[in-house]
Length: 169
Image 1 (cartoon, rainbow, N blue to C red):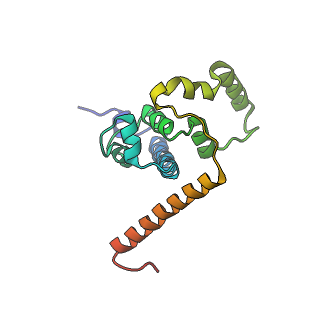
Image 2 (spheres, one colour; image 1 turned 60 degrees about the horizontal axis):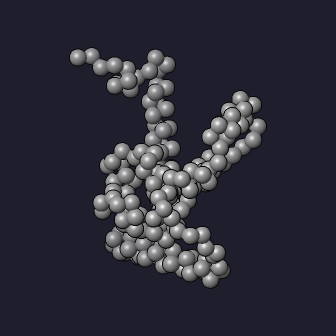
Image 3 (cartoon, rainbow, N blue to C red; image 1 turned 60 degrees about the vertical axis):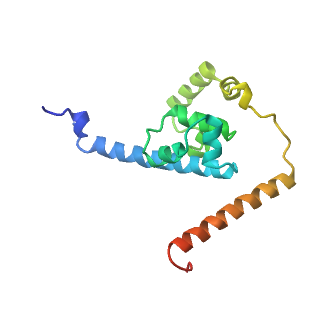
């Protein structure tokens, strides 16, 4: 049976589909790395997030490594648990630049008018039982979170250097 262009990954324009697929993989890997960092910086472990979502052990690792198909619902669920809005993640991934294209500006305005407020997504989509009350963060809280994160980072570096069989250069 003959395979279609879609199955073989060819394109009438030549290697355009292959290049586009490789760019998509690279972008997917970049967003995945950002999400991994966001989880770590939220001072939660993958297991904490999995437990909160009712997922089995290792689900996030399999999602991050490509063992499971990563879907938008996974991204939104994880972001909700770590209390980080999709808008902020995408703003970091794709910083806003005004004036690139009038058509782009027009489309953005129309979409904002049609689908608007990101806060309503977070409030309506988050189950009542999992929402945490907003709290004021003090400098002491920030210092404590930084210390916890630094300890985790140092422990990770030490573990890697021991696994590599010696002291880092």
